[in-house]
Length: 180
Image 1 (cartoon, rainbow, N blue to C red):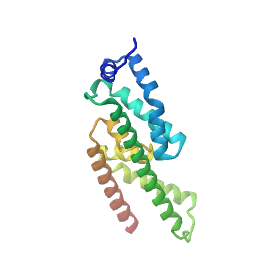
Image 2 (image 1 turned 120 degrees about the vertical axis):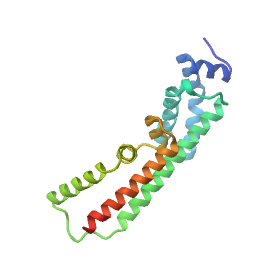
Image 3 (image 1 turned 45 degrees about the vertical axis):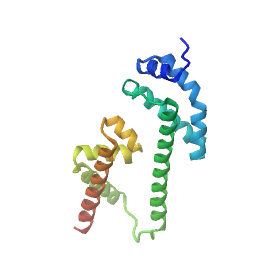
């Protein structure tokens, strides 16, 4: 069955029609990848972003609102690119900060390293479950806020709030541990 119009494609996609999804993919993959590449300047990252958008689209097909489909896809790609760039900027900022720090006067022995690792794990374990899960998904599994929101079935703002609270809690507990 060949679908011609976006509203027909959207209706078929919502019904779980794999042919409609395939047609949407074929119709929009290249323009979306070009859009992502224009923003990210990396083929691999552009491909990842577009794949993430299509994966999310298929996962949420039944709950998609009635939308202007083309604009929705392009906006989803733009949002994912912004998320990726924001995360890269934060990572670069911290990498630069760490590189600018003077070398420690002493090097940790394997025993000290293990002790620090155990202390960090203990502090992370003290964070409430929802906040800990968001922290782990963001920092240990390198997922975007939107991906975390979709995986946990919570709002984007809830993810941001949980992550902010988790980071504050970690910071305070680590400072207290260090000062003790």
